Length: 221
Image (cartoon, rainbow, N blue to C red; front, side, top):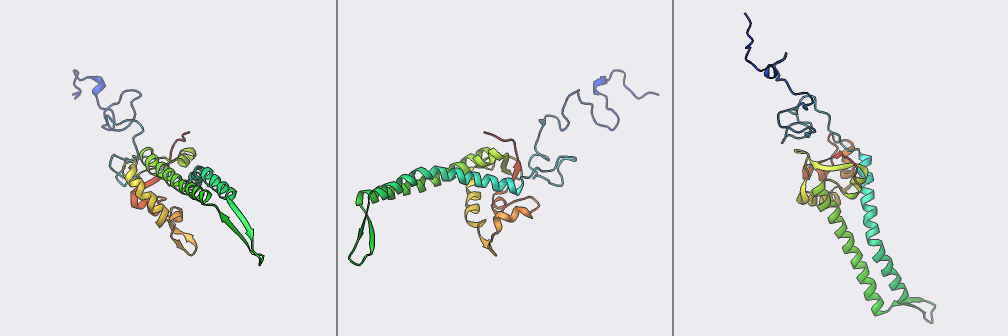
């Protein structure tokens, strides 16, 4: 005696294994879930034991790529402050006078206006450098996942739990951790910066504090 219902829609019949048939070309996964969903289910961290079976391994960024991005960001920041520093040095040099006393000692004096302009330019350089770091590593990286250096090398900072941008607030805390905690030396080694070499999720201390990880991502201009 056949158990098949002749009125049942063939497209709705269940094939072997008990899984409902999917239209041709439909991406595998849960109904309504877009193709390319981040690893695991929403709200679960990358590599979570309950993540979807067969999901690809988390594409952690290499320590070398992270170092390269750090150096590129530092280089761009140096270029930002280079112009006012050079102009300030030229102004101080042009406004200085050198004299020698009767004992043969040489002294150099800088005029009041030149000294004021030079110091102002050095102060401007410091302000521009800090402003660039905050824009690049806090606002840009926090909202888009990539600083300039990271975008050029194809890596990104994301929330470990969701794979989304960490936001400007968490990015600011992460930046402070990188600037003051990850640089702490032990036996002449800044441990925080080297921590990704042995951490299973390749995190610095700043990443741990911000709940972030650094992964490979498409390069941007």
